[in-house]
Length: 225
Figure 1: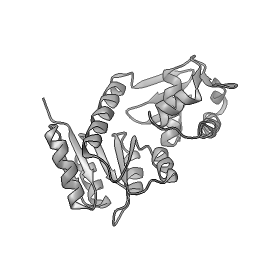
Figure 2: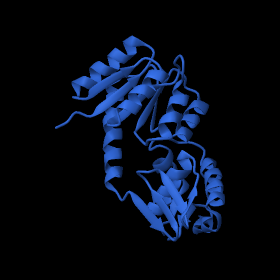
Figure 3: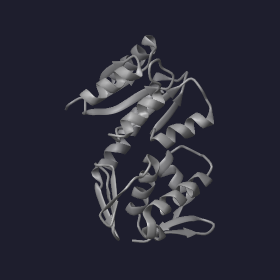
Figure 4: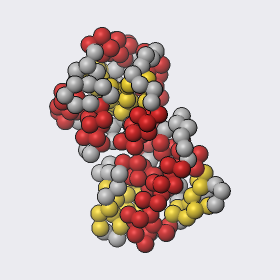
């Protein structure tokens, strides 16, 4: 069985070695980058990466910038590492499309467990239908592309994920808590109002088709298919 390839990006060599050692024990193939620029070079030259572990604070290019660049081309799972415990940082990470968020110091064993759990989740997602087409709205997960009546619609990463979740669960009532858990992060307990803000923007970008996202007062939303 081919080893899954993981890119570890951190400017601290001791941290990279620690993470690499624990991942290799679990039979992962590990690549290292010491700054954001090197990380992007390795990302673009290795399109078979299964996951990226990315530090926030780095020279030349920080983790946020690297994440933005990667998300413009790929939905590869990203775990963000940070020395901060700031909620604003977490929110920014989830907005950019970070899948997991781990604060330093952390247990390497816990990190490995998170990696394994995230890869299980994403492999299950990959097995699901990659193109959704409902009422003139077409969403291609692999190409990260949305069209409405044949015209491209420019969505942010989270708007895209939100629409994909709605379309995959068409005609089902979805609570705000359920949406938060599936779209933002399975263990993220943030302010549910962030969903309302994203739904408002999403409806606007979808034009007349935005009316398909119906509000269920006191609960959440339903996408009418």
